Image (cartoon, rainbow, N blue to C red; front, side, top):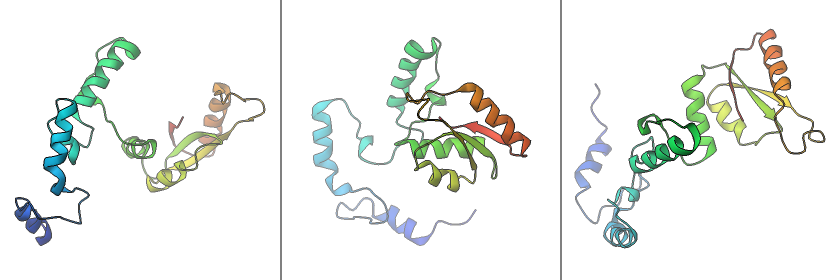
Length: 167
């Protein structure tokens, strides 16, 4: 394996210096002590909220969500280690598309849709296949399963590999 770049090694060495501020990372350790005091006033908190944590989401949050989903949604145990929590629909949707799609795959999307989807669809290298709905007929934005199924068949007839339906 390649050695770590020099700036990373310097960063690690300087972490113990309370006056060190690394502008390459979005963390300000100069405020740790006052922030931790404030965090501990409101609830039991180990301080992880002040910086980066597990990329799947904080373990206590995933555990609480698993309990909620188990009791109120699925009616069976949900393993918190199988959950991923992210800040924002774009971030989590992109992660999901990368996990389930290959470059060039197609995603069905009821249209009109949030224009922010185009950015993460493009960066995930998947092709959108808009399924247009008549907003005069579907005023409540309800989904029309037969229309989605027809779009799936049409996309497949065009040789598109449909991997997902984005709702």
